[in-house]
Image (cartoon, rainbow, N blue to C red):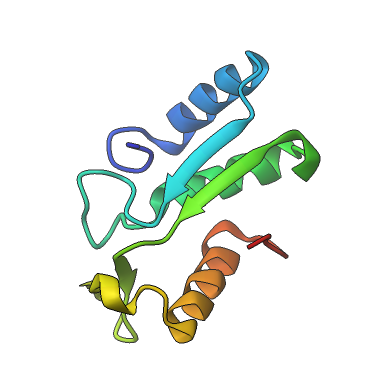
Amino acid sequence: MTFGEQNSLSQSFKLLDKAFDSGINFFDSAEMYPVPQHAETQGRSEEYFGCWLRERKIPRERHYLIINHIGAIRSEHDDFTIRFASAMNHPIRRSRCCLYLFNNMKRDYIKV
C-alpha cells in the first residue's frame, strides 16, 4: 500500500474511484502503511481511505474495510514506535488501536 508515500491524495482518490466503480468494495489497510514506513507518513493510508469514504459518501453497507493493527504505533510522545508481538493482545493496546482508528479515519463507530 503506497497511499501517502508514492501516491498523493488525489491519485489515491482516482485509484479508489476506479476500483469502486469496477465493483471492488473490499479494501485492506494497516497502520504500518504506507510502505516504506516513515514516522511522518505512518497511518496516512488510513487517513486517505477515511477521506475518500467521507467525500464520496459511500454508505457502510456498500464497502468493507479491513484494518490491521500490528506492531507500529505512535507513542505518547508522538514518535514512531514498534511494539513487540506479546503486547498486541493487551486490552490497553486494543483500546489505543480503536481510538487511533476513530481519530485517523474519522469514524464514529467500528465493528470489532
